[in-house]
Structures are given as C-alpha cells and as structure tokens.
Image (tube, rainbow over all chains, first blue to last red; front, side, top):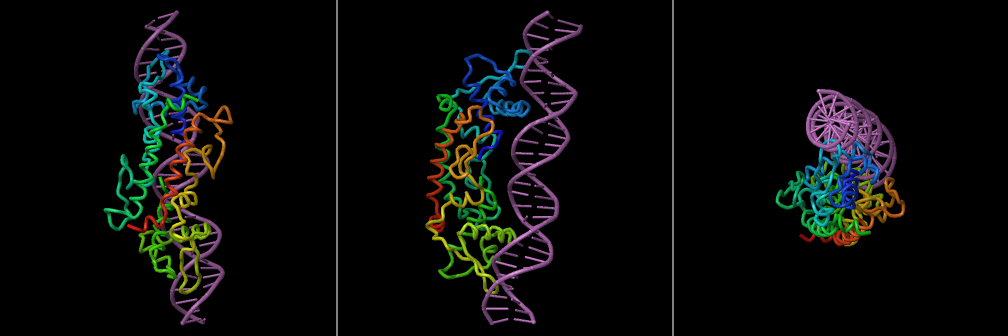
Length: 137
Length: 137
DNA sequence: AATTAATTCTATCGATTTACTAGACTTTAA
DNA sequence: TTAAAGTCTAGTAAATCGATAGAATTAATT
C-alpha cells in the first residue's frame, strides 16, 4: 500500500501538471486544490524538490512548479522516493537491495526468485503509469 | 514490502510443503528449519490455521501440517491474510475496498483508475506464485 | 529600509504498528 | 500422572506514520 505521503505527492504532482505552463503554484493553493494538509504538504514538496521532480521560487510570489516532464514521472519513481522498494523483500529489490538476515544460505533464499518475478511485472506496470496518463481523465 | 510475519508464513508453508506426506511438524522443528523465532512462529501458525492453510494436532506428538494443496496456496492469499490489500490504495482494492476520505468527488479519485490497472497486473503475477512453484528449486 | 508573503528547516508529538517475548492454560499420548 | 505439545492473552520496546509548530530565510514591493 502507498503511504499518505506518496499518495499526496502524486496528487500534488497531478495538480501541478494540470496548471498552465509557467504557472507557479503556492503551497496553500496546491493544498486546497488537492485536499492535502498544508503543513504536511510542505514537507512533501521539499522531498519532491530534492527528488528533482519540482523546483521552487522563494519569497513573495514564490511557489512550486514541475521541472520534469509529466510524461517522464512514473508511479514507480514516486513510490521509490516516498515508500522505497517496489519489491516485496529487500533481497529481491533492484534499488534497495539488502540480503535477508534470516536466510541460511546467504546466496539464495527460497523466496527470492519468485519475488523477483513479481517485482519485474509490478515494476513494468508501475512504469507505465505516468502523471500525464493520470491527467488525461 | 512484505512484513516479517508474511515472510515467515511463506517460509513455514514452504517447510511444511517439503515434508513427507502425513508428517506432522512441531513448531520448534519449523522454527529451526526455517530460521524463525519460535514464539513469533506460534502466532503465525495459529493465523495460518485460522486461514485454513494448515491444521494442527494438539498434545504430545502434535504439530502442524498442510491441509491446502501446495499448488493452491498463492502468494496473493498469504499476502492478504497477513498484510492485507494488494492494491496500492484502499479505493483500488477488491478485497479491502474503502473509499478515500480526501477525494473531493467521492465517486472517482484521480489515482483510482491507474492503481486498479496496477492491482490487476500485480495480482495476476502474485496468483502465479504458489508454494509448489517455490519448492521446486 | 521596512513590510509582506512566500519557502525552508528543525523539532516535536501522539497514535499506531511491528516484531517480538512471557507466561499461564489446555490437550493428548504414554 | 507426567511430559510434551499446541493455544491464548498480555505486554513491550522500538520504529514508523501522519501530522503540527514555529522560527529562519528569501525575495518582491512599497
């Protein structure tokens, strides 16, 4: 399941993607538009900035805007930024790999292979969902 | 990601599936064999019993054994028993559906449709992984 | 230079969940 | 009767989640 943070991030990105080119959106505007607690959204936008999905302008008349094409922002990327690995166990993860501590033979645990199959299919599906694909509704 | 509980459950089921027909496995035997904390495993086995994956014999020489065919126990089912919904949001879930509280138009949230596509693909993949398929390694 | 309006940063908080552990109780075979 | 197993109910320490608070910084306008 997605965390609220990841869900809100997607909704915020969606909101930004729906705005006119060159429009800068204030946090409060996004919060109201997408129904997200404002203070919580502040943190999320900072995370999105660190992840180079958005950029910001400070000071009066400042706010946030997309710097990544809405066709290039996938559900997989947002998931990884906020909720981490897409695989079901760390030992089956591409980007967050860690060996299982409880597997006797450290090279291969009994679940790893099967979970990597799942990961490949889920990942492919998640890479197919972009902000652009969600906007067109 | 899977919880430890779900991971241990899978490993316990795998252990049971590898035993001879009619063999009854004691908790301590499974715990040692699959490297799972014994007291934690006790709870998990009770959950698996309530979920009708295994049954038990009490008293001396008691223990646990599979009552569901290893071909019929899928990753999807174990996930649902221990970690709940497979979908990324409750509003996109088949078995754990709940409407989102933060969506303005209650009928359709902007993410729901896309997340249902993911759910269908992930679910299909997870239904393809059975205990039997994991044993054959 | 002062004011205003915005982002940014750091800290904290309560509630819940997770991953266990402890111990008493019940059941069954020998 | 006793030993050896599962069953049940609590409890607990640590981490995570979903926020909230408030001060600091930045930038445009007056």
